[in-house]
Image (cartoon, rainbow, N blue to C red; front, top):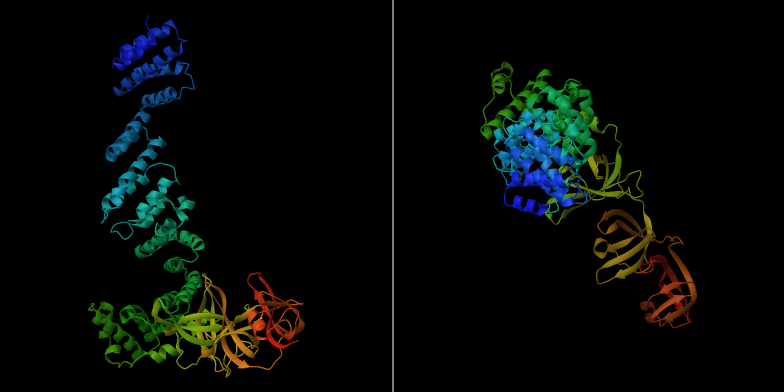
Length: 634
């Protein structure tokens, strides 16, 4: 009698159709036998693959119906998975996808892409085909976008084909193609913003806003931050209004998320200016200038924005720009604009000086003298005018309006001049300490500025200053302008505080002082012309700063005092002492250290009197009292 084993044996010999007929006969005999059902199922799968490979769709559908009618045991994982795969072969869409996936696994990505393209011609609405083709294009793109120089033509072709797909968006795949596009920035014949309009920046995911952390620990900007900044620059360079209008809202959104990225604000100003929205641009241009106050191009930008709003303020901004330190070749643009304003004011000699400086700078660089400059040179006013020696006084006398734009609303703040110092890792960068008295700080804060940024030559350490400044987004106090303050007292912004010397280290040549529980520190012998002794009292002016070890203090001035300290800091005592292991404690819990015990030969139950000072016990993490002087032992 025919058995299922014979069917499986015939299949194994490759006689698929014969095995199918045998299995069909078995099913006619007993369709309830599990092994008969299993044998017939495998034979049907063979026939589906054979008929689908010859495009015999009628036969394929016939075998598929027979397969669907079988009562398959759901617990048989191997059989159910095999049936699911066979059904895919019965679906023309799925068949192509399976074949393409196999080609992809074999690394034959171009062949896989061609299969997907053919399938999309037949089934253009199949989203899975769009998704699969997108991933295959991404894999091919790896070789295009990682070889320098990038073949722009091939890269653009790949991006264009991807954009026309109908895959899921937003998605990881969509974001990966954004990274490809970012690699083309600066390449000829590639416009980033039109790509982004098709890509649609609304498709950015939260992952796109996450910074990239490299294996070496360095952190790089997120793809969203990079692309939006690059797009803003690209839109400005191309000056296509539609592109500028598209990217501007995304720049504003990026500013909120990446508030410490100065360049986003800078590009926002430029974009608004290009759209002739100078009133809006003005507010943000002030932020730019404050951040780059010593850069000529920041003042140049502000002047350009103000040109149609207030030409006198533009004039003042150009004066500020020309006061900044910069190579002459970089100042040519602002000099020409400034010269035109000078001509409007009939300041012809001054205007000729500016034009001469531009010509001189261009000749020094070996650059061509532009048509505009040649027109100036041939003009009657230029030919018949003698230039001034320089415009330094002109700049100096016309910066008030520019300064007021930035600082008029800021109050003057009292400050004192500190000394200079260098950071060991940057020995050539001399810095200067400033001490600033802020209304919301208990004591003046210590900040530092580059020594070459300001002119402190006529001042001495401790002299009074007044300045305008504010905290930036990183919590650093930025100084914008300063002037000498009318005071003869050194360090006058610091109040004098009464301190007592509570310890001396002769080896290190330092004296330790304490003012109260909130303020203590050290004084180096070399900084002051005093011989320090225990219990000496001084009036100190003390600055506060923070470093990686916490809050620290610097004594700026010191003078002897006979004033009485507060009883919360120092007190007299007279009490019986308990001595143990060379250390003593009075009945009222005043600690007497080993040095005093040995020096005054203090024994257990002796009565001792003296002076005690508050002392912080680091082991017990609490304040107590410690003997500072011993006056008698009895």
